[in-house]
Image (cartoon, rainbow, N blue to C red; front, side):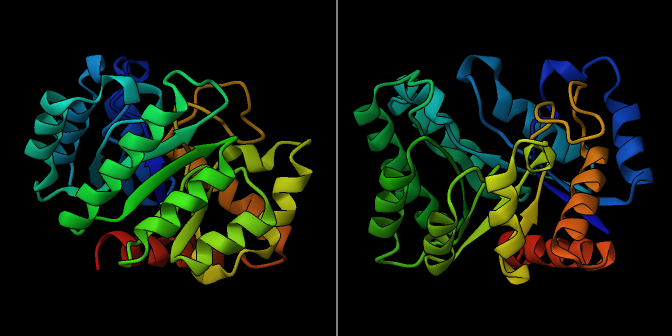
Length: 257
């Protein structure tokens, strides 16, 4: 019973074999996929993700603007997002957040757009899916501001410190690990993953990116979430079935309760 809590299977990377890819996911035991409806606004990602969710019962979707595209956020873009936000298969708002590694948008713009989308997520009573890279302190600051009125969410593709993870959990945010936790040199991240309480753990692929060992370097896809589950089970000295059941339960607790 696996859940891929974050992927981008609406992207062009899957156009050649999307039906076969979804069959492989089902064969691997994946019972739910969250296709993130965000990315470069010009790719119409939200439209494509929403269409997929409409076609397949086991696919959920989200809405939002990625921090890379924060400079594109304007009233017209917001109106377009709001058209999707009330849809039945939309279960989250994201991915949103801060990325100070690439700085595709300036930091003040990223912060403004992040805060605005947090406000909208609360209005629609949707949990938030947070992207944070090289921006831990500002991310925590925004989450704390927002949580003056509690708001649930997940730290997607977690890559931060143990202390930041602890602070996120205190704010009611789940911690999600992708295939990069399996990389040989990711020892610090593995220490964090070992310590996360089971009730706050999620797993994802972030497909088509970050294929886990033993598939590193290949295109990622939802079926590969099983390798991350297996790795975490061995890392934490817990049965794989326990990891699968807990992360699936946590997903439905966050996005469907």
